[in-house]
Length: 190
Image 1 (cartoon, rainbow, N blue to C red):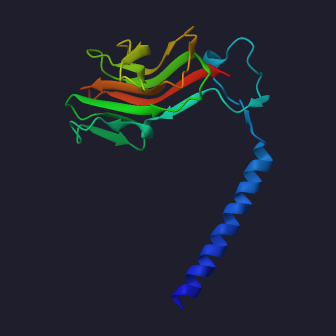
Image 2 (image 1 turned 180 degrees about the vertical axis):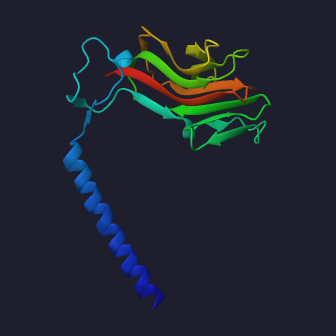
């Protein structure tokens, strides 16, 4: 009886996945539509609202992709209703992997945070590590301004070419319970 039930569940699940995959592939056709992109993130030469281009830029790192560096595991909280993470008051260091294709050129780096702490700022780094000798370099960094409220921090004109010899990640340390990290966006050309 149990084997028959598992077989039915397996077949139904497989059929649903295949149906969903066909629907998504047919609707998307490997293109991304740029609807509701904030004017602040529209680049010259970008597409108009409703137009599409081959999938790619931006690469988005959500707040859920960040993880603790392993030193102070209980040092942060993830706020599901606010879409971000913050320190619990202890100095916590976090990192998030970034998986970019070899040969793309990073031209902008954006981070969205809510900063309700006028006394402390946070710096969020985009770094790369050499896969052969372990040397770490900072590609870009952004710093919160100390202004209260939602902030879109950005760095323009990077012109950094992604190399297969390096791995990329985001990193930051914070002790403020009033700075909430939401997401990062890395704009690139292929």
